[in-house]
Image (cartoon, rainbow, N blue to C red; front, side, top):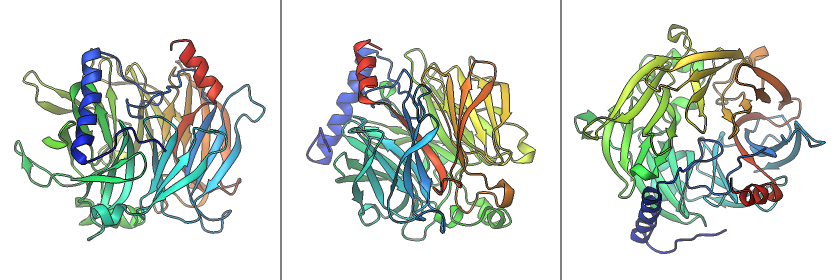
Length: 444
């Protein structure tokens, strides 16, 4: 595994600065094919993706019962279209949740919320046949944090957003920085003091970077003591419901110091940046209030969080859980877990999002990812093992859709229960080497 920047933490900081300045000075538009990816990731897939990798929670008594990386063939011209082509088990259950590419796109880092193991898969050598090549086990001992959530590529590094801590398993947590080789570099605590008049709550969730603006944004959720309880029990505990994240933090990317804390009530989750040169804003959705929030600087350069609209009927607690922003930042897909809806919003004016389409895509739906060209959409079903629905509502699937700008048409379904695989959660795309070379030669 490559690590382009060796040495001490100060050298790591200089490496980050080089990347930031290079992007800012060139004026280049830094994007990735799934817009939740880090803008530092190379080998963009702007054409047809060949595979979707699905990080999947193990279920006792279903197959080997372990968490696993499942690979689905999603190229319509392939004989195996819509079928499972590979499954790599990690041999245990740790509440598999999110994963992320290294900056060279050769490796996927994946983790679970119930432990501190990090699994590194080689997906670059043969994306149809990923291999588990490393297991990192020192995260808890190095940081005191628990539950790695977001894996975000920096130049030669992986920044990890955490959800909990090993002390009391509450929501106060931080960030961890590793080299691409799996060597621990540094930890950064989420702020718990007032910054510019707003109290930090110490909670974490997602991580997202705008290199040209030297800004890192983080959002907030809850700790192990919340997400590992059953949802019904948690909602019935009035005191516990008071302890969810209600803030976002604006960090100086070069120094990794928090600059502002913003009030964003109701557990703001996924963060998506509009990264074109003329754009300078990000969007998130708060799970508990079902509100869309716009984050952008005011005329004085101070960041502001603005509530700009609702997702469905907030009174019915639809529980928005994932979002996907188009490459041009003009459209936004939002999945709501409780009502099983996938909604499309027009973001031509980000301060006034307009819902233009909605489809019931399952009894429960969680993650949503769209292709670079916006013509294909993928949806998975599982949120958390203790939050998923029971009985007939416990559907576990990956669904592929075609999008013509007006409506979604189902292309295929993989039933993860029938396939004895488990509960599908996070997705990442990959392509055969010949596809990536063709894209690069075409200058796309």
